[in-house]
Image (cartoon, rainbow, N blue to C red; front, side, top):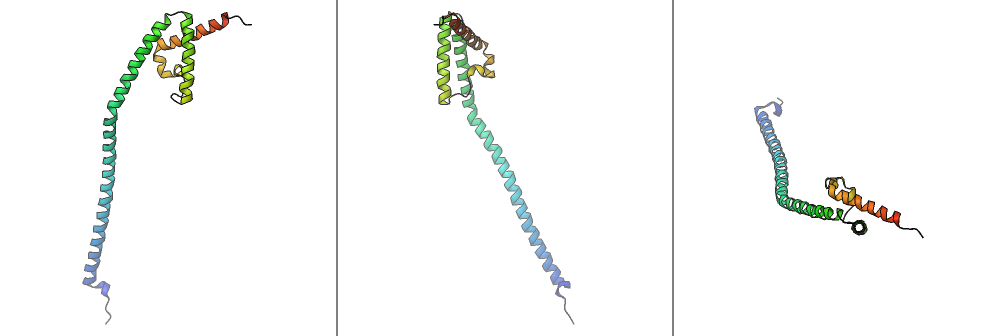
Length: 145
């Protein structure tokens, strides 16, 4: 009589046990992977929130400083707009010199008067325009040798 082990109840129990163990391992691995993914996403989100909370006061302080400087600049521009052409030419020369130095050092990439965000400071733009006008008038009125 030939005996086929795979058709016996013992083999069925063995296969069931193997299947159960494989299922348990696969479920465990899937749970680990899902937990890792969720934990990583939660950690990234929490890290971003903490970084933003840490940087926010510094950004607020920098914005306040820039706004204060803009008010100082606007007041100086108002005063200079009322000055004579010689003062406007002196401003234009000093502005061009400082601009060249700042760009050479890499402190700024473009001239501030070309920055569309500064267009809101119309008094500063008027000052730059008036200084250009004064420079043009000064060069036109200067006799050529």
